[in-house]
Amino acid sequence: MSNVGSHTGRKIALWILFVIVHASGGLVIGQGDHRAPIKVIIDADPGIDDAIAILTALQSPELDVLGITTVFGNATLDAGTQNALRIVELGGWNVPVARGAENPLIIPAGDPPDFVHGSDGLGNTNMPPPKGKHIGQSAAEFIVETVRSDSGSVTIVSLGRLTNLALALELDPDLPKYVKEVILMGGAATVAGNVTPVAEANIWGDPHAADIVFTAGWPVTMVGLDVTTQVRLSNDILLRIKQRNPTIGTFIHDISQFYLAFYESLGVSGGMFVHDPSAVAFAIDPTIFDVEPFAVRVAIEGIAIGQTIAASELHSNRPGPWHDIPATGVALGVDAEGLLGLLEETLSRKREPEEGPDQP
Ligand SMILES: [Ca+2]
Image (cartoon, rainbow, N blue to C red; front, side, top):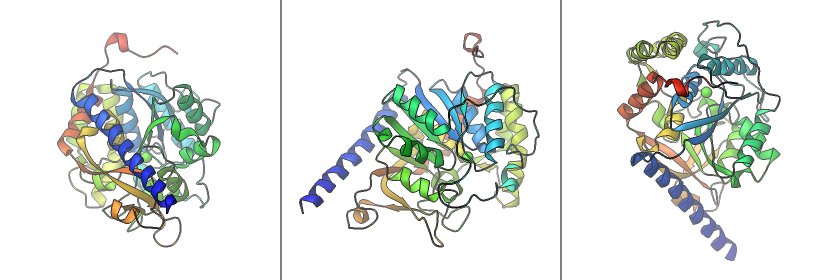
């Protein structure tokens, strides 16, 4: 019985931690407090919406992007890594790119969804190769070293399969103590999946890695289909960004045409769902979202493989797979206009000359 008591105590502590992390995040932005930018590592599989998300992060004065780590998913690992380098070079940012996992932890890798992102991951725009190269460290090594060197300050924003994060945890099991928080685009708690009736692509693509990340004991926010499918980014907005900030706006507009056509073919009107940029937007301004705590586990086999099963306190208090699982903040509501406004303003922002391209 004493075990039950200590479990309950730990769980309450994790619930409180979750509330503190998000309350403080809300206060910082909500009160217009100009603190130092939030340090982030972006883990991504670029990917059209990844590209928009990464550019939002790079453009945002609220965020300091310490590095981009790549993972297989929307494109092959090689194509995704090339795309990350292209994105960084687009604005002359001096941000390292670390190459990550090429395969899931356990299940076999599927083919990249070229019908969604094009065979190059950027809507078949077939852009010239980047000039730069990825760094020698792997994504997992980069994550561990960067987080450890600035303890408690670094947020990881994950926009793809969670393989790199799981590998980083394997490399350094104490990593959760040093990470500020993890914000991930993935999962579907209260709505249908987008790969199977119950599974969202990033979780389905490496369910074992996702379950490790949800149960690791660090503050996690899940920005999944519950909110990302509530918002449409239209071509009209992309055209306005292009007019105001031609270099980045033209790139985003061009890569998005293939993606917009995909959504149109699904019968989604008014633009594309805002998947990955929502996770970056949460890092910039969490007050745009309504978040509730759940104990999240991932189905790792059977027909529900990749499903994120979110248990409320009622269920997580009972013995079973959700018992004593740290609380994940699950985004269930979003201010769509607020999110679209944030994206449009951030992507349209022309950096001041003194903020111009960093010198390598
Ligand atoms: Ca992605």
